[in-house]
Length: 126
Image (tube, rainbow, N blue to C red; front, side, top):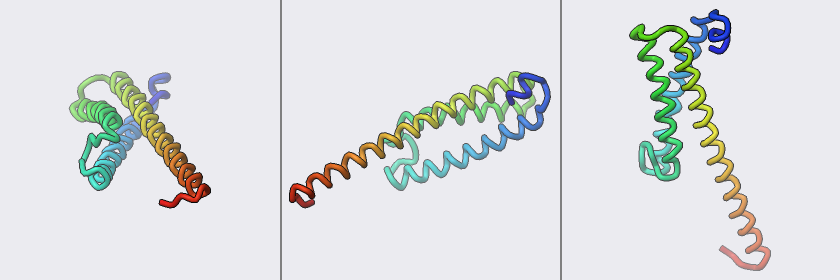
């Protein structure tokens, strides 16, 4: 995509990569919503992942807009690539949200384990 924007070459490869990534994102979204349903009882927007899901909708919306414009032949190649670039930027932010959430969860888990170990050393049991 960046190569196309810089040189005007490689449009077909860039387009194929965006389409494949969009399909992968849809699969991730479906499996993630199944996981949320199993763990939190909601398909999407469970309290624990509300803002991550909101941003995921933006990411999917941008990718879906790209596919719609591509399939209808609306817009020029450069415009489509800039839209794909915006979709990728939104995806990076969304991925950072999930990484931060995972790190916080691991930090909290270590805190609980440390507290349990301290309680055990003091002779307290669960």
